[in-house]
Length: 319
Length: 297
Image 1 (cartoon, one colour):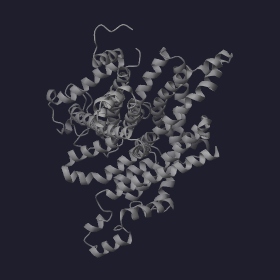
Image 2: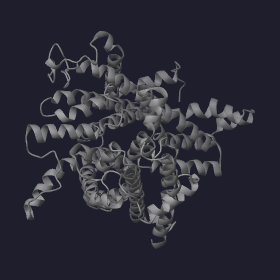
Image 3: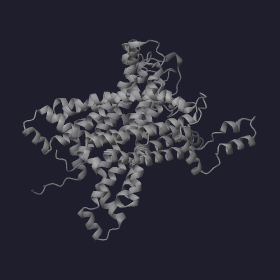
Image 4: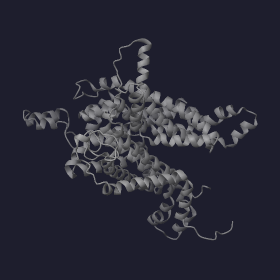
């Protein structure tokens, strides 16, 4: 297992470099100039602008600029926000925990929905339950997150007035009141993301379980006289989960996309809404850094998925 | 097995199988209705999309305005019919880009062994692990002004959005096509063509590609839905089309601050996106059954 972990770590590094290259290439080939504002400002003479350009190394070749940018990103020097006048890493560190909590809890919710429903539907294929579950799964992943969010606000905030639809980061209460308020306002963002993920996972899990459940070793387990629930939980589900882990890892970029939308709808102060607000404010350093953080998160979670895969299917880690 | 008495063409057989999937058939019907509505609707309902009438603002559905009006008193039905054209056009065009790029990458990768294949698959995997929405937003942020200046606001935004969405969705198609090519190129009928002296290009175009199209068509269908959602997402975040091009996502973006007083404004375009995407997903599901000749039904 130790060598497997090490190998996965080593594979993650080239993909991190590849993604950072794509990111930097987009920025480098984009038209426009970070000092455009200075160029239109009549109070700034042209030589000052030229000096600034050389000082920040904007006239160096692309490769040199890339290496400098990447090393400073790795060293934790992420620059300075044009708009809020704070270091970018400070800004992101403030907001990252909220995003991670919302994404993490929504994945837990998705798993809690998808695992029982998917497994139960697969043990009774084409039954009424299976058909209903299938229909709901189709509806679930055809409903875009922004529309589910709006529907939830309409029903639970405006119509029933149960839940607040603006996320507050300055709740004054303490103790269990604080947890109550925090839970109430986090419920809708987590549910929107979790239901969307849960719908597509249900289909993955159902088809993965269906593939496994007809195999001979399952019949063997049954004929040994094992309890049906033991057969399903210990023999079928564990083996069905390996392809599901891969599919979930492939879906990660979409999960982060959904998180951005959800944070924007409910005004959750995470890095997704930071990205949108800095795009609207032309705050390039923050935009680059947030996109970079999202890339790192995708790679990190892919790594975790690989490790989980190695744990679920030990053959993989001995290869 | 006895010879079949009447020859059934591949298309007729696929249609027969598709019809048995009732929800897919219903999806096809709904999608046809939606497309007909956005294509011919503006002729039947010739209300201008930017006719401002403050006396009639934020009205809910009525005979005069079947889908109600927005905060400027503009007719929502007319705006949705017009915006639907853009939404569906974006979906189709982005799907086309994704399928063409994916097929080319997959075909080249599947036909060439060794370094080229490895490099292309590494690129595919890299693209699969890119955080798509943040990158989409970044590219649109960086390039929109230049393209607007080059070809005008409407065309510039359309080209940019279609290219970026298509450019981030070709990877599944490339993987599918490569997998198909790897198995098909070793089949006897391709070997026969090779033995008869068919050039590699002829082998691909005449023999391998037509046989690998089934999964590509299914993936392409699902891609239309995904592209419509992607465009709506961009517009919903306020970074897609400008307000004078009321795509369904843009309408939702404008409506979201009036949810308490004018819920109809958000519900109609949202329902349109949902219905279209659901129909396309069901059609994809039906095609998956219909185009797999090995599947016994």
